[in-house]
Structures are given as structure tokens and as C-alpha cells.
Image (tube, rainbow, N blue to C red; front, top):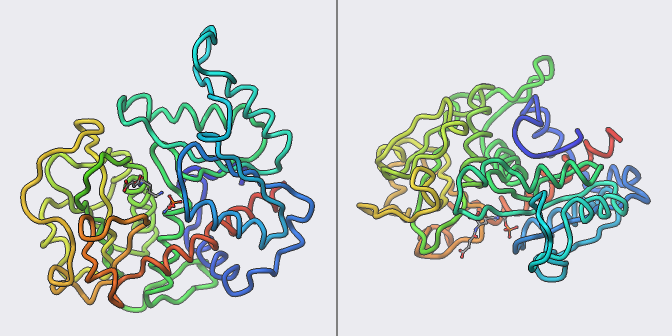
Length: 332
Ligand SMILES: NCCC[C@H](NC(=O)CCC(=O)O)C(=O)O
Ligand SMILES: NC(=O)OP(=O)(O)O
């Protein structure tokens, strides 16, 4: 593995989940792998979970870690080519990425979208330039359109909290009984948020569905349909109640409109899940990537109940990061 950017960087989802759960069972088993190696974590936006879990994962593998908050502590970065830098930007990504690559064996990068121009955000220009110029493997810590460490975590969490047997001959998890029904639902928010988390969750769950692991449904209000490149094979519905029937996992997330790019659209009806709205599910567990706005996006009655998996899910971020870093180290 030379980069970790999307579900396309993993072939067998069952295998990577099994490997992650084996890291979870023995966190320090591979601590010799990263000895004298340096992980650099570069943030252009805030983070709690990604910063701490990736740092912990790298340290479990014996690596040293440096964190750079480019948004606060770095020189203002220029990403465009062919401009005379006589304005506010101080350093070009060509030099900045290359220099960080000199210091680090693996780099992680967090770069959110601007949410102004769909074409620009969906080109993943910043992530791609960083990857090109740093000359070392790069792990996405959430980019403009995807959050793969979160989505791998979410798949680990679904499998860990369901009933599967791992078939050694097929190298596949096989559901014991009915496949879990996983529902991604849009929820309200006061700010325009990126589509990265739902896009990514959707592309991982569509692939998991193809590999026979889950049934996948997305519920969203009119106008909030995600880019179709991420939702191929998913069942799309516009009524949350229909989606929740017999669901085993409810994944709650707000996102801004893709069609009316970056906008918050008027929405009819109640979209914030509560314990009452879960009654028609199959005793569903509730997930969210966090941070979550209580009683705006998700009812605190759910968050404070045993139905919520959000803290366990955040705990699993370590094992997703650890299996990805391990695979990159093994490749080097
Ligand atoms: N890394 C996890 C999610 C990050 C981001 N959430 C946020 O920006 C929340 C901000 C707020 O609630 O004000 C998102 O939705 O993509
Ligand atoms: N879920 C997640 O990525 O959290 P942070 O933004 O705090 O890293």
C-alpha cells in the first residue's frame, strides 16, 4: 500500500477488517515494524479523534510521530501553479510537501473542501498535489470528498457488533443468518458540512454490499442526494421511517447539498433520530463519526443509551489507522 485515500486502495474488505481486529487483540505485536521510522501528521483543519488515534496507532507500531498544524503554525500555503506569489501565500505546496517528505517515512494529511466549487473540491487537487510532491506514502486524514480511516473504522464496528464467521478458505466474513441492514441517514445541522464522511461511508458500504457483508440503504431529503459515484448499488429513499424499518445499524450524519453545491436546503419533517424513531428498527445500534451536535443532529436520549456505539466506534479509529500504517510499513 503506497497511499490510503479511498476504498479502491483495499481489495478484500474482510481481510483488512480481520487484520485490524487482530491489531486490536495484540496492539504491540508489531512494534518492531516502525522502529526508527517517522510518521508526520499534517492538519489544515481541526481534529480530535484522527489526530490522537493515528498518533497512537503509529506509536503502537514503534514509530515516532510529528504533528504539524499547518492552518495555525505553518506558512500560508499556495497550491496553484503559475501564479506570482506576491500576495498573502508564503510557501508553495511543491516545496512544503517535498520538505515534509524528507523528514517522514509516512505522511497523513487532513484537508477539508472549500464547499464553494464542486469541480475544484471533487478534483481533490490539494491531496493529489501533496501526494505527488512529497515523494513518500500518504494516508488521508479526511480530504475534500472522503474520510477513509473513518469508513474503515465504521466497517470494523459493524462487523464487530454483528454475527459473522470468518471463512478461511474464502478469506471472507460470512453473516450467520440475515445480513445486517445498514442505514445512512441525513440529519439536521446549522452549518454547511462537507459530503466527505457520507460519500466515504457510502462507497465503503456499497463495496461491502458487493462483497456480501451488508445490505445498504441511504435516507435523505430531496436535494441532498450524494454524488452518484459514491452510491452505486445503494437503495436510496426519501423517507427516514421507511429506511429505519428492520434496520440493524443507523449511521447518522449531516451533509450540505451536493446538487446545490454546499448549500443548506429547506427540509420538511423531522430528521433528527430519537429513541422514539428507533422503535421500528431491529433494535438498531446508532453510529456517528463525531463530533456530534446533541439534540440538533442526534437525540441525547440515544447518545446516552446503550444503543449508541459512538464511543466504541471512535475507539476503533486506532485499529483502522494501525492496520493501514502497518500495511504501508510492510510494503516499504
Ligand atoms: N472529521 C469528522 C467530521 C468533520 C466535519 N464536521 C464538522 O466540521 C462539524 C463542525 C460543527 O459541528 O460545527 C464533517 O462533517 O466533515
Ligand atoms: N471523526 C473524526 O474524524 O473526528 P475528528 O475530526 O475529531 O478527527
